[in-house]
Length: 253
Ligand code: SF4
Image 1 (cartoon, helix red, strand yellow):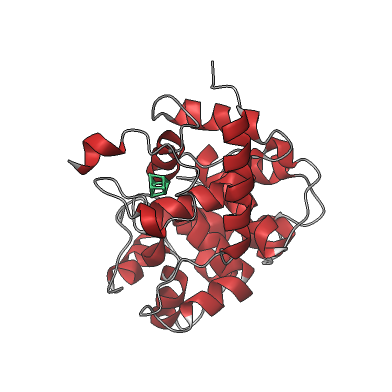
Image 2 (spheres, rainbow, N blue to C red):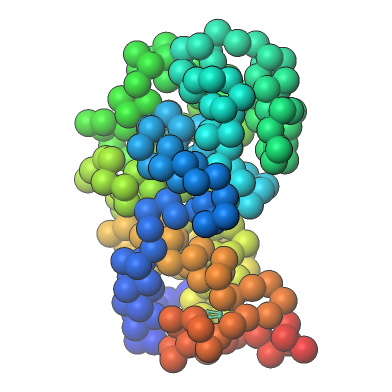
C-alpha cells in the first residue's frame, strides 16, 4: 500500500514541478565533459537512444557522453553499420574509450540490439520508434532490447516528452525510474515511508496520476545536486522550506 498524498505532499509536488521547469531536458553532461557530447544526444535521435539504453550502473554524465566518444572512435554513428558489426567488434571499439561502460560485456549486446532494431524495424531512423504511437508501445519496444528494463524504458519516454521529440496521450502509463536518487529524495521529502522501488512507483502514481513520470526529473536532479547519500546541502536545495528532511539527522551524523 503506498502512502496517500497529504496537503504537504501536494505542496511538495508543486515545488517539484517548478524545479522540473529549470532542468534542461537531458542536461547530463558536465561542463568539463566533451564539449560536443551534449549537442549530439540532443540533436541525434540514435545517439540519444543508444545512451538511454546504456544508462545503467554508471554516472549518467559518462553514459550520455558515450555516443560522442564512440562516434570519434568509429568515425560514424550509423545504426545500420553498427548493426552489421559483431558484438566482439563493438566490444573492441568500446574498449578504446577513455571511460568505458561499467558492464563492458553487456554493453556491446545492447548497442548491437538497439542498432539492429533501428536499422531493420525502423529504416535506420531512431525517431520512427517513437513517432505516432503510444508511450506504452514505445516502452514495450524498448524492453525488447537487451539490458533495458522498465525503469530505463520509462526514463527514455520521459526524456522524449521533455525534449518535445514525441507527444504521448497515455502519459499516465509512464512511471518514475526509481533509482537510488529518486528513492532517497522521496524518502527525505516524506513522500514514501521507506526506500523501495515499489513504494516510489506507487507514491508517484498517487501523487501525479495523470503523469507519474513527471516527478522523475526533479527528484533525480535534487538527489544528484543537493540531497546526497551521506549528507545534504539543504540550504541550496529548492525544497528546503517544505522538506521534513526525514532520516537526514541520522545520515548526517
Ligand atoms: S531539503 Fe535537504 S533533505 Fe530535503 S530534499 Fe533537499 S537536500 Fe534533501
